[in-house]
Length: 206
Image (cartoon, rainbow, N blue to C red; front, side, top):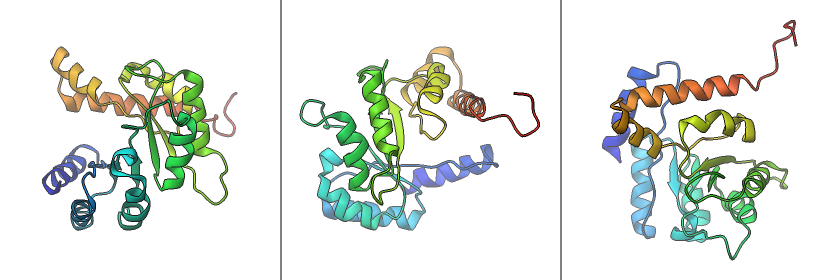
C-alpha cells in the first residue's frame, strides 16, 4: 500500500499538476488486520479506501472503518446479491446509512448489469433527502468503457464517479496504446461530457 501511494503521488505531480490523483486500496480481513491497514492509510496519507460491506460485515464498516478511516469510503457490492434486498434499498440507501461515501453498482448494459430503472433508483436513493444523512456518490460500473462516458454523464449527471478499469487495461494491450494515453483520453472525455451539462454563462446565447 505504501509503495503504491508513493507512486501515485509521483505520477500525480508529474502528469496532473492541476488536479489530484487518488488511490483507494481495498481493505479486507479481520479487525486486527483492518486496524493495521487503517494505520498504514493514516501514516502514508492515503486519501480514500474501498471496502465490501457484505464481505467484511456491516458492523466492521459501521463501527471500525467509518470511525477510524478519516477518508472517503467506497462501498463495493460484492456478495450483495439481488434476491434478498432490493438493490436500490441496499446499495443506495443502506450503504449510505452504514457510512459509505460512494456506492458502486453494476450499471445497465454492462457485463452483469441491473436494468436501467434499478440503476436510476440506486442513484436516486444515494442522493435523496434522508434525515441528516449526507448524499453519497453513485458509481456505475461493471464492464463500462470510455465509449459510454457521455451516456453515463447524461444519465446520472456530473455529480457521479465513473469506474472504468478493465476497458483501459485491455484496450491499451489490444491497441498498443499506453495506459497513460488511454487514461488521459478518458479524463478529457469526462471533462467534456460534464461541461456539456452546465448551463450557458450569463450573457451567452441560449
